[in-house]
Amino acid sequence: MGALSELQLSLLALALLFVLAVWSYNKWQEFKQRRAAAQIFNDHRGGDALASDLAARSERQPERGERIEPVIGSDSEEVAAVGAPPLQLADPDIDCLLRLTPREELAAPTFWQAQQQRLDPLADSLRWLAWHQGQWRQLDAHDAGNCSVFVGALQLADRSGPLAATTLGELLAGAGDLAETIGAALELPIAAAVLAQAEALDRFCAGVDWRISLQLVRGDGKAFDAGVLRAALDAGELMEDDGARRAVDATGQTQFVVADLTGAALAEDQPCSGLSLSIDVPLVADATAAFDRLLAFARALIAAQPAQLVDEQRSALGEAALLAIRAKIAEFQDKMAAADVPAGGRRALRLYA
Image 1 (cartoon, rainbow, N blue to C red):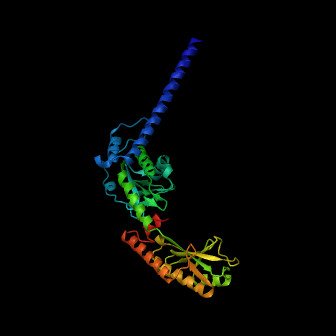
Image 2 (tube, rainbow, N blue to C red):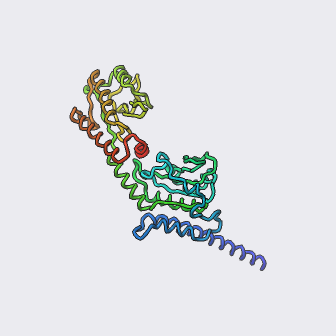
Image 3 (cartoon, one colour):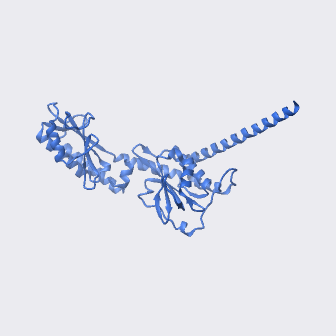
């Protein structure tokens, strides 16, 4: 009976040690998360907190269970000579970029699995690029081959708003853990600068974000004649697109969209009481030309039916109002061009997606 009690005491002591070890590990993880979040909100006037944190990471001893200690720097002349990815893959004006340089080339599947484990909450927005066989390429879960440099790109703003501080905190904490796991030098931007850049970009984008929506309705309240409407749509060379019609330019880019006011599909055998004519100004390379084409379509239909152009409040739009709309379109597009975010261009298509 006494031997059994000693065994029970031994098992209890082991259990307590195990619980203490798990508790200590969890506390360490919480500390790392708080430290990453603090980097975002702390005053950076006294120095770069991120740089200090990375230095601390590089100096400390590896923890039990870590696979590879982090490496600062690289002896490879080839890796040192690798420049930045092309702008169509990673654009520092609209992306937050981080760079990982492993001590040795790393298999793409190994890297992909490691980043999934540490940055899974950002899987829908974080893109990974890799230097492989002398060129940059965007990675996905099916890539193979060994890569010497990895770059993560997280967009700074979109139509839902700027990059959130909490999201940036997740990126910084996850990237630090990833660098430790794969044994890589890690280059990060200053967190405060990233958030300031994201806010400024969002303010600019919001200031020129305009989706014009005009309406074409019959003055007598009747529905459009189906045959006349179909002829106008065909004459305007408007492509069918999921119940609506799209006008496209020579490159296939959408200029404006024609849809039923009720949301129903534009069908030959269905009555239509009114049309919505819309232009997404930031996404159209030449929105003034698109507006001219929209008006030409509307006027052709007005000539064949007793209809008029109105705004969303059903107020009639005369020539003066239409000229004012056209001038405002040109103003917005000039602002975008001056900011090196041309409407309908690569950057605009990403920011206003």
